[in-house]
Amino acid sequence: MASGGKSYSFKVVLLGEGCVGKTSLVLRYCENKFNDKHITTLQASFLTKKLNIGGKRVNIAIWVKSWVKELRKMLGNDISLCIVGNKLDLEKDRHVSVEEAEVYAESVGARHFHTSAKLNKGIEELFLDLCKRMMETAQADEKAKGNGNSQSANTRRGVQIVDDEPQQQSSGGCCS
Image 1 (tube, rainbow, N blue to C red):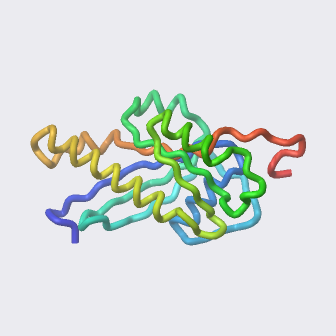
Image 2: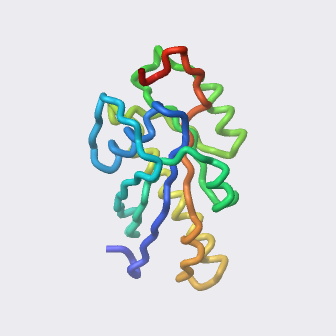
């Protein structure tokens, strides 16, 4: 049971090129499912997951979106940012080196994660780290406001998960 009945709700937004595994990450995390067949995702689709972290209830809604500018307009810089290199199981097909991704992540103030939705690797760690950081930020905002019950700190809190640098598509594309 959460202490004092406190719970948090956060939105997690996945951004990145098509066919990099955004939907696969979400399906693996929320429903422990993986589908080898690529199905184009509707822009407004989302799944939810409920967690208990440190005795606090946490609800996250994970969205798949293809736009960054609108997200920035809505949230400004009030976000936690991660760079995720998915498809760790396809190392031979890597387009962005680990070093490149880590340097980029550091340059934008993000954490870098390696995942494989297919092999179910690194996904729990990714979302747990995000939730903990969102909670820490929300709690710091509440403490700064001095009342501990402020909902305004939670209403704009978001997380943006961005796949590694845009990948160069071959003439055949990734999904043909």
